[in-house]
Picture 1: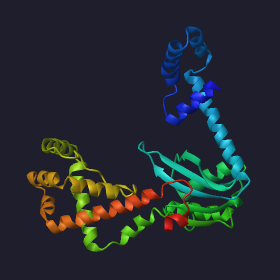
Picture 2 (picture 1 turned 30 degrees about the vertical axis):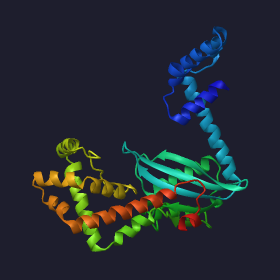
Picture 3 (picture 1 turned 30 degrees about the horizontal axis):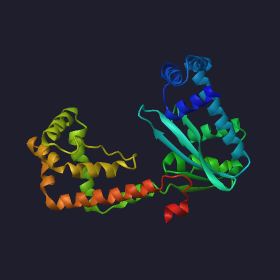
Picture 4 (picture 1 turned 60 degrees about the horizontal axis):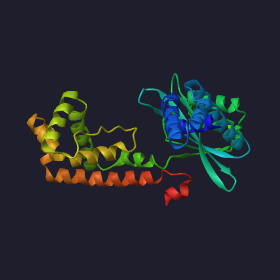
Length: 309
């Protein structure tokens, strides 16, 4: 039992499995020996905490969690939230969260987190899902709704994941993530705002995407005692990136303007234009509000009614 409890703590903290044998056990022995006696401290040596043992214990715990979750959703209706995203190592990961009624409330749990080894098409995503359902004897008819980010692989009319799931689960409905509706709204913004956004992206890329410029800009910020020493890149697939990059640019606008003008970049003049800066400040404020709103959705048991309100 002690071995499993320590393994559970290590898994929760995401620490290396050998931390138990190399650090935790010696620390516990020191504490027991100091507070009690050597005889009590020797009992600690009987607890199996080797690297391989901790690994097996964590595997057992994970299998228990998985079997408990599957047994729950087998006996009830459930909905799925799916997202395919690429991690920092360039590996495509499919994450599926399941929401289901249990006792007197609704619960949310991570059902699948698996890599897509080849392509990220709707067919491949559905194949991975279907194999998981078949392996664990989960009926597609129990799936009543799916929520996705609206990517083509998910929502394609013929070969999208949703279309293929609806062939299996006839009464299943689908919906679009409420978070990503902000991203959809941005696609039809007025031209004068879009122009500012495109210029800010170019300004950031001039510095951030060139290692030499990034190093020189950091030195300039250090010399000026700036609040920040670097800019933040904006990427379309990161839903907080646009707001964060705009706020950071506005906060170091003076340093960026000096750097661009000293290096004869034409965009440096934009940071001397008061009206252009007013538009940048407006956008930074708006996107901060949108980010704060999006963060407020990130909690357990939030329904579409809560999010809409």
